[in-house]
Image (cartoon, rainbow, N blue to C red; front, side, top):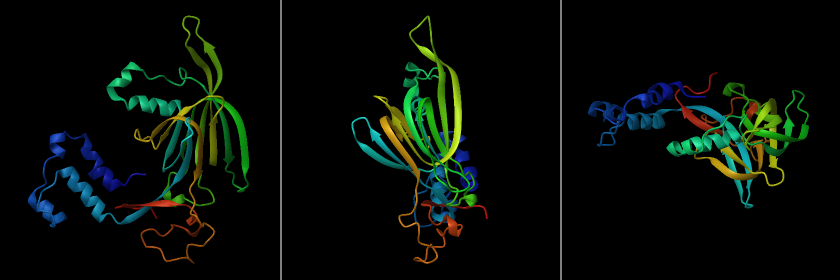
Length: 271
């Protein structure tokens, strides 16, 4: 979800030349926004500050938790709001983040990717609300998780989940001309889950990327557990607890158990 005001008035400026977005705003425009500072800011900075100061309509972003164990035994706990990429997809993103240096490594597709020996355990989300735990050994190139609910106004603690997509290698072919093999047959499996655990079998390690952010890429991961974030005391009705600010009240009573990050926007969630 992207606030239309922010997209139109801020992100759209990024396609302009740097000398344009770095131009200072006129004195009159600056005074209309805020007369508390004398130095005139570049156009882009002025718009970002204006957005941060005056955007008041809330949009609640559901948080997800990723607990990772690295090859050296270190444990990391991170949160994300949209997606988690594991394996080849995350590794490819890490190579692209290297910029010009990425040309030395090349970027392979799923057919050229090195398969990962994984144990995948997940809780499948069903309409009845009953748990359906599944445990499978998989040979995959990638295991990706994305936010299943695209519209904030449809969020509900009874159905909020993640879309699990596994790209599985069914048949691998070794090349006669080179030692490098390729994945001859791939299968993509999609399932809605609220908890998933991925572990490398043997000495298998993999890369993990959160929210497609090149600054949130973790290498040498041996185990990754992902779950929907809930409030510490999700059994308490939000209406009986301490009164919440009008900006962060849940959209619906059943929404109270989910742990969300309130983001101020001009448009807010659609009613």
